[in-house]
Structures are given as C-alpha cells and as structure tokens.
Length: 100
Image (tube, rainbow, N blue to C red; front, side, top):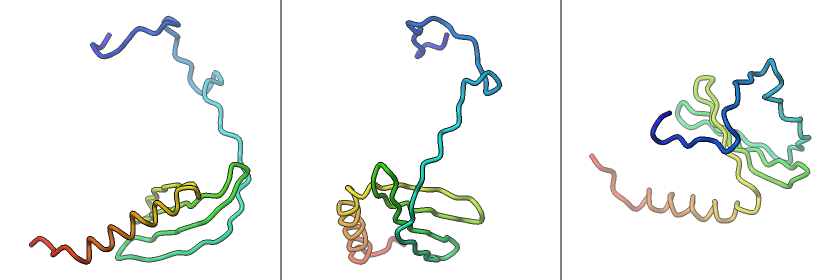
C-alpha cells in the first residue's frame, strides 16, 4: 500500500473492467441550442453556444486548436459573475504595461 492510500471500509474489490458492466455510458440528455457564435483568435477557434436542457440553461465555451478541443460549461446562474470577471481582466490587460 502506498503511504497516502487508506484501506477501504468495503475491503478490496477485484478490478471490474468495461466488459463486466462496471462502467456504464451516461444516458443522452436532450439539449436545445438557443444561440451559437464562433470567433477566430490567432490560431484558436472559440465556439460559444447557449444551450438548454431539462436541468437549465448554460453556456458552453469550446476551444479548438488544431483539432484538439477543450470545453468549459458555465451555468446561466453564473453568467453575470463570469462577465464581470472577464470585464475586469480586459480592463487590467488594457491598463497594465506589457512586460518585455
């Protein structure tokens, strides 16, 4: 046992891979696209998509760089706070001199 591991109160369990049904795929959740915009910045493409599903609305921001994609999802309840923070970062970027 590695020093930072703790024994499980359930004992040791044998490995159960996908062939034994241990990992089940998530069920598909219907999502409706409300609005979508794409912006190209240097060699990166960003897709901002406002979506809605049974749990609520959210903004999905996808970054595509040479076929590699990363995604961030922001619930609509946090969009105002997210916008305020982005506005602060833009202001700081415009006010602070670049380091050379």
